[in-house]
Amino acid sequence: MSFDPRFFYDDYPRIEGEFGALSDVSLAPRGPGILFQVVRELDLPPDSVALDVGCGEGRHAVRLAIHFGFEVLGVDPVQRHLDLAREARRDEPDEISSRVSFSRGTVTELPVADASVELVWCRDVLVHVRSLDDAYAEIARVLRPGGRALIYQFVATPLLSDSEAAALFPVMGVVPTSMERVVTDVAIARSGLQVDLDLDVTSEWGEYAEEESGQASRALLRFARLRRDPDRYRAAFGDAAYDVMLGDSLWQVYPMLGKLAGRILVLTK
Image (tube, one colour):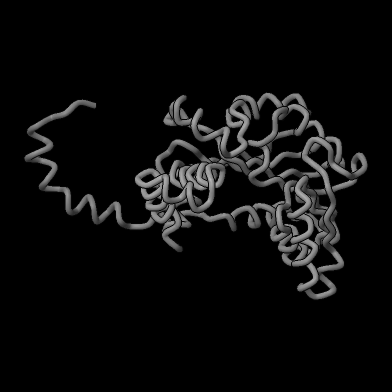
C-alpha cells in the first residue's frame, strides 16, 4: 500500500464521513459468554463431572454448576485464589455450593484420577505453561472416553513484533512458544485428542468489552499516562507493580490492534 496524494486529498475526503459512520456501527461482537453457549451445545448431562483448570477465584466453576448442574472441581496453583473461591462459594445456595469444590493443582498435574471427568474447562491458562505437550497429555489423561475439553487462549499474530513480544511476555508470565498456534496444534495431535471446533474470535471480546464498558479505551488511556509519567506510579506502587499495570494495559489493547487474537478449541477424547 503506497501513498496516493490524489486519493488522500481529493477522493477520500468525499467518502470519509460515510465511511466513518459505517465503521461506527457495531459488528455484534460475541463476548466471553460464548464459552457457556459452546458448553450448552455439547449437551452434557447434569451431574457430569467438570474440571475448571486455572479456576482463579472460582467464578466460572460456580457458573458451570448453576447453568448446567455439573459437579465442578476448580483447580489452581495459587492458594489465595483457592481461599477466595471457597469464601465466595459460601454465598451460594446449598444446592450450588455442594456441587463445587476447589483443590491445589496445575494443568500439568491435575489432582484427579485417570478417565474421571466429562468436561475440562481451561480459560486463559495455557499461555503460561512451558510444556503444552505435558498439558494436553494431562487433559487427555483425566477425560473419560468421549469427554470434552473447552480451551480458550490468546495467540500471537504476525502483527505482534518481536520487540513487542519481548517487552510484554516476561512481565505477564507468558511462555512465548505457547502463544504460537502451531505449537498448540502439535501438542493436541500428540495427545490423541480430536479437534471438533477451532474458532478464531480475533478481536471480538475486546470489541464487546469496549462497547459494553469502554474497557479497551480506558486501558489505552492508562497506558499513555503510565508511559508519560512513570516516576509518579513507580513512586506510589513500586517498579514491579508499574510493569504489571503497563503489561496488563497492553494485554487489553493489543487484541484491538490485531496483535493478539482469541482462539476457542473444543476437543474430544
